[in-house]
Image (cartoon, rainbow, N blue to C red):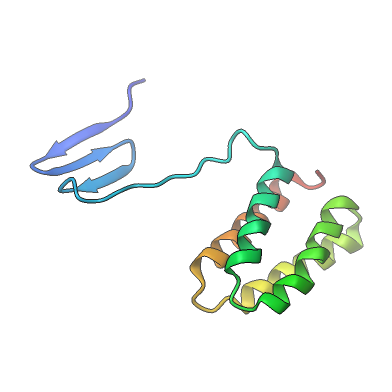
Length: 113
């Protein structure tokens, strides 16, 4: 099936990505070719760079990594707790919040790796 494409004057709708007046730039990152663990590693790298509380991120990321390496029920609880603490402390840091949400979704869908 061909991808949807609509033109309304200078507004283009193409495959769910909107470009208004030809002035916007759209960036998209697809993680489909990565394993769930590789996807999490990518998001953890984002957290290391973008979390507004670097000290907290440095203490919680090893907990997440341990949970992924040794998938026990206790480590899963610790991993989820670490994600929760990181999420509570992101404030307006959208990139960090998106990374945390993505990790949570990947863990929920692919546990254990």
